[in-house]
Image 1: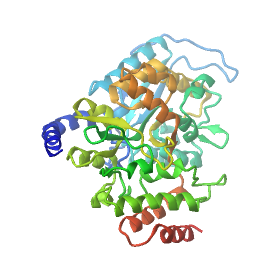
Image 2: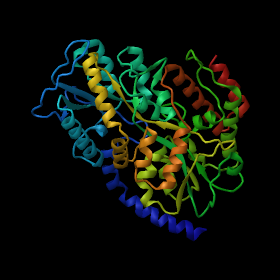
Image 3: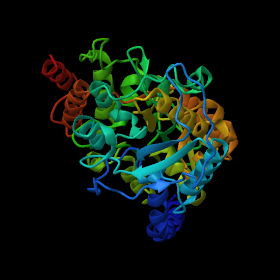
Image 4: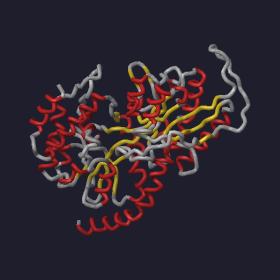
Length: 448
């Protein structure tokens, strides 16, 4: 076993030498790691737009009951740099070609992309909310927003319902989590187009078959790591996966806390067991995201680890004696968490709304979405696009099952309150300060 681990370590050390060069390309093309909370860089309020507006266009007027449509509509889009067309990386080149083809086939429309920071002050959401009050005339026609940040747009009333603007076929083809994350009340207010999910990888020289249940997990002396340190004080998706696999709920129909005692305590018992039986390293509370899990796995002492689909696709060619699996849950029920970005129509003019919907539908055709997904290693949010990727068949079939059973992370202040309390509970159990039963009682009392 020591010689096997030594061989694995030598190969992985060689991989680590190329990480800096790879990271520059990856960061340019794919943006943040899906589960990490990125640092925010202030951006100039007047960024240089990426324009694919043709220099000349042939007017194609269309009749409308609301009056004649403009002969030419220059659509403006706001979004992070990783979704901008250009020549900086493979994903940007794909988008550049798709935008050019769109404007060629739709000479009455132009497209201008304005880059914004992804999060925080000066980010997409911040600009949208600020401009809606101070300068609504500068708002874009379309914005690309993290699906986790859709709720503030709904509360501000600046997201246009899409159910009458986009085809039923497209909406029906979205994976369930993408439909649910984008629906508020009776309104579909966004279209999630890409996703990253959390699953597991394992070292095949240690494990012939990956554990599917908690019983399997404790049947062999293996090492298992997952994010437990929290993200900005909020509990990691790893906990949410286990809780939701037991059919627990976080919020009721009115959006109030509805955490359930039994699922909470059962998951905390798992955390207590991995501590007591040394299944997970003592440093697990120092692991805050999936990229730190990947770093721990490359050190060669971990048999089973959580990973993001983006990291797996990005690094699979360099992995040694490593395969993929679902995250083990108590009963073996398939469950995962998704993160991703969505299109939101901000335009108020019906003509501009219809034009924006045409652009979104174009970018989200199965072929276009699959082409961009392959270039960036992010998963398509619609089912018909997944088989069109060139990823290995076994992994594509695995992803289909995972995406059909994926959950989304709510984006409300009440959920943040729950997630913060859950992280305190996780830390209490993993440090041995309280038993799972004591911790659960304290947690439930704090949320009343």
